[in-house]
Image (cartoon, rainbow, N blue to C red; front, side):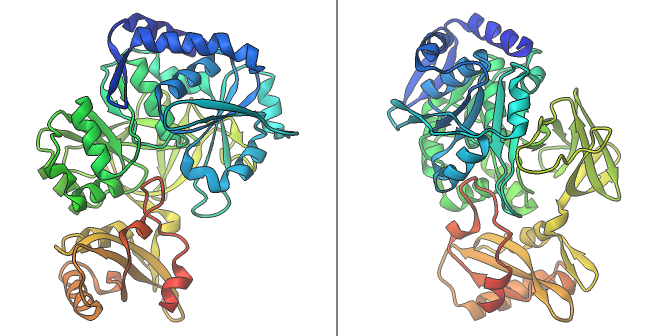
Length: 457
């Protein structure tokens, strides 16, 4: 509890500084801390206390943010859910052994449901004996069955004890995403302002940035590409943005170039983290570079056979439903293939996503960067499809600005690729799809699960 107590004590010193922007209304730190205190007083009467596994369904809002801090103070185990997770939520509730569930609506009103006969995992039962606040999040399951991840909140909070500069930060990353929870903690720890969004569409995000005067936008390359394609930036005043941080997937250099043009006064920073390890400190070589230095206090990195390994003081406690991925010394193989240049790293892609064409490697983001240079291509996703002779070949799903015939498009994109890439890297098929099918609710590209459907298309 030491780190949590230290940060909340500092938050109380914020007084009339703005803590939250939600629904066109700003709340001070004194108002926000009063909400935390109100929840702290209310929880015992609701039967919520130390060691209890508590689900919270909703989107970032004043009451939800305050409840999170009150639950950490009460040493409960938090299990956040976004509305996008509802189709899978029952399985997650069962896996986590959630005992009570708070549901929040769009007006920040809540109801509480007691769940019948929860069965906690052995890991959760053991963790409860520590008497520490916990956090459970779930992997996306894009490469298999989702895993439940248990964190010790005090260990996660430790890196925020030292004061740093605060930002007016858009809470773009999802409430049930480790990166979203990390953003929440860092914003309040440094007396920043948490800017809540009701929807994660380019139009709404741009509107909220203009209304709130947000200075930091943590997001994903996929969302930035959607923002560019929508043209929403043209009708909103986004001049207050001083920093754009991106992570969770690789950034095509073509997208990065466009972002620098649209936000000439903003620093663009690549971030890196995994739900199992936390979010590492990072420093891009420069705004226009995809080379980045990662690590910082509490993290160690090493590269073995071009694969990144990380050891963290904030390692997860463990998986609820899978063996530990850590070796005997606490190192975890991330599965991310990288290239080294002095202190800097360039991420090439997850090992599982690399396409092996007759023994030669194709990194999807390299091909996507070329495809995005075409003026009619809004989004591109490159992935591997099984092939009887080559093992795999590359296919590309593309979304367009304007309707165009498949034959004309294929000829042009193939010539574009042949002019910049080795022949084995050029997709053998281009499939026109709707933009929404290119990414999931977390605004991350969907590369898995297209093998068979694409082969039959």
